[in-house]
Image 1 (spheres, rainbow, N blue to C red):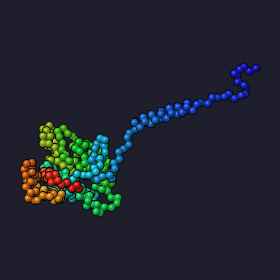
Image 2: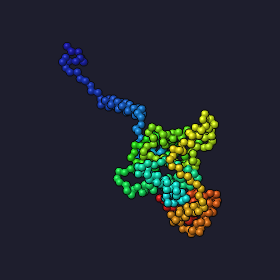
Image 3: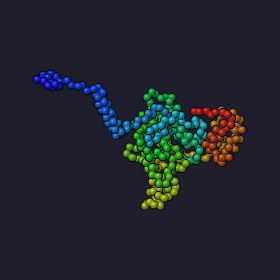
Image 4: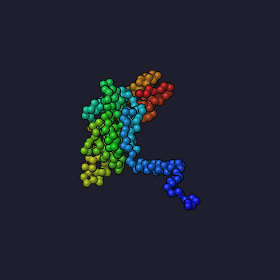
Length: 318
């Protein structure tokens, strides 16, 4: 006799199926766990290596942290023919840069001397002029000549910067404006190794141009301090001076005469088609230089900007 509620022998026991909501909840928990694991692994994994795109511009600014090349949409520069009073230096730098762009041997260049006489302007203008000339016979797939500006504060990261450029088929001018080193600054040793030393040496597709107001890049008191504390004073001085020696091409810039200053003014005024007579232009330019107490390319350009504003004329943009 079967009791109430007892199972019938041989009969299948009914199994209550698990609800869909319960299955869905377990799946959601597993998905969230997997996502947390993936996120944790991504945080532990190193970031992908930086790969620069040198095709997007003709000039870039290197930054060390985070490392990368920032493209410059439009380079601020003057045409080479407007840089008066520095023709000899311009010819030498143009020839050196042209050889380098063609894959021939060329020297690192140090442009030193008087303030405002067009050192950095010459580097930028030369880069543009060489690119313009080479573009006439350029074939598809040929490498370009790129201008890379590196700030004085990032000199210590120069080896990383060169590593990226070395893997490119382009050729590069690395440009540091107003390069100098202060007391207790040792980053100049990294620059020395990059310019000419080390096992690898400077990459074949890289040239280094620098401007400075002083020829030896290091302050006199720094050299004299090294001399007084060194076992062999002459060796200490050699250590400091040898940085400038790594530049095979030295170009000196000196204060210009009044005639050269007025030639700069006339060249700018003609190029930008300023509506002013030559007599008035010369009179105002001389007065401008006297109030500034200086004559230089920078002072000439400042005068032209002031004059164009007073005339209500906009300056041409290269």
